[in-house]
Amino acid sequence: MANSLLPDPQLWVVYLMAMMFATADALQRPSAEAITPLVLEHDQLPAGAALNMSRMTAGAIIGPAIGGTILATWGTSWAYGLDAATYVISLGFYLA
Image (cartoon, rainbow, N blue to C red; front, side):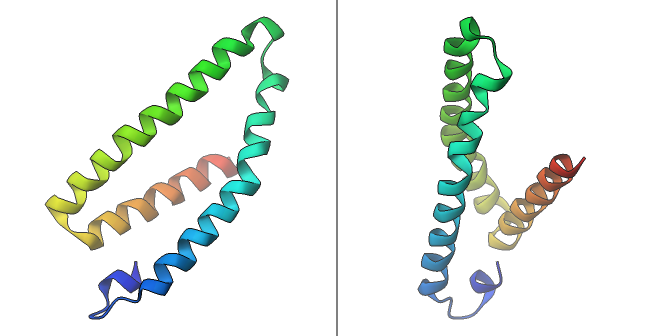
């Protein structure tokens, strides 16, 4: 967020953040997918996999649309601020 507000934003920061998010995703995704068979009965696994794929696809379509609307309407500061707020809310749910 701070980089985007600078008069001359640095591109290397974007690459660094992308690398960090990809690394975190590579560590988190296998464990998130491995928990599905532990919480569902064997006959429910296909439906669970379909629901998980629907969630990911909807997020890939709806997320950028909402983000683009926020960015175009309120600007970069609001977009990053709302993104940070959703991460804090998610962390709160995770810790609860």
